[in-house]
Image 1 (cartoon, chains in turn red, blue):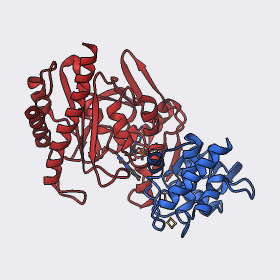
Image 2 (image 1 turned 60 degrees about the horizontal axis):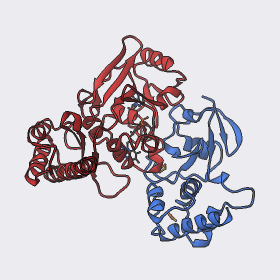
Image 3 (image 1 turned 30 degrees about the horizontal axis):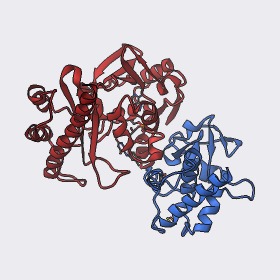
Image 4 (image 1 turned 90 degrees about the vertical axis):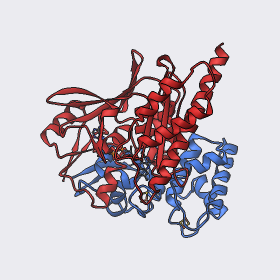
Length: 288
Length: 157
Ligand SMILES: Cc1cc2nc3c(=O)[nH]c(=O)nc-3n(C[C@H](O)[C@H](O)[C@H](O)COP(=O)(O)OP(=O)(O)OC[C@H]3O[C@@H](n4cnc5c(N)ncnc54)[C@H](O)[C@@H]3O)c2cc1C
Ligand code: FES
Ligand code: FES
């Protein structure tokens, strides 16, 4: 096995092009588990943690660009106000030690259907910036990034540079079912993001299909039904929950049954929408 | 490969490190620092918690090469000579140690908590220690110890 320490982004891209089998490593919270347990024996590890720009974020023209190496702990501390949905999801990841090390870039690289960053990225219309030495930058919308169980849209010579996402324009919520408050892989999860300017609600569903996904029909239903100047009728919230649940194709596994997941998704979707809507109305009434 | 890393203030050059090895293995098996424990090797138990450039992490999930040029502080580096750190003293006094396997990781994690947040609430203590498993104590004495250490540090400050 080789160990390649990339110290600049250009070097990292060149190393990945020269050795497409090299496995990038950032927080190592997925990669090292596989190596420790002999599940994976890659020809090389490509350490990206020395690449300073990956650990930075910036805001330009109303869009945040978050380096692939920004940890959950920093995301919560530095971007929690601008990205409340992603910050809520980040707070549920592993433990404090895992959040000190784990990154959204790594979550995207692993592309687990249970990855907690995915639902809020989907709900917030995030775009993934991928790059290769040969073809340069490619912008991939989150909804097109997840291709299958632990499979993403990256080419073998590509690396994730950053995630682009607008700061929240309205309330955002994330909710996850698990057996305790820490250290749980989601049984299922839901994220909603209100986009009041467009009179639209974004959704993301985790751990309930081969890939994280948007509940497109549920989004269309709300776009047609919601009256943004009044309260949220209970039947609309309930129907939204049903449609989110219907978008999923969950399986029975050790963490839960498909039937439980379907039920829980409907409850989480109804709840998160209700929380978001109440926040939105409260803010709107204060301004009025 | 050769690894250059500062451990508890001492610059170390470690040879023949395997490229897929963890920092935990380097500490325990190559540097003779068995304080950090190896229980799960998958980030679940926290018994391998060490500071990496001042941030507590699971040493079992850090590839050795990722520690190149960085500073590691283990449980062995908490005391000053023979003088235990207040967190260590509090663990002894509160009876928070039974078999002791979880203790080194808890000490580093609790040490960090109190450094960052000198007056943690119970909820904050639980949150900070959620990634450290203990099979013996039932955690109550551990919470007592952290409260005691925090109160002493705040009192001394
Ligand atoms: C105890 C424990 C608890 C956990 N709990 C949760 C949880 O609650 N929720 C959750 O979602 N996850 C959880 N995880 C999984 C893991 O922490 C997350 O997936 C995390 O986001 C991975 O980030 P990382 O930086 O550590 O990734 P790494 O392990 O460094 O990499 C993960 C994958 O991404 C690839 N990769 C990394 N960086 C790049 C890049 N820049 N470009 C292309 N590919 C890249 C790697 O090659 C690898 O395939 C847990 C893991 C552990 C050990
Ligand atoms: S041995 Fe590292 S967390 Fe358990
Ligand atoms: S004292 Fe035995 S595991 Fe905690």
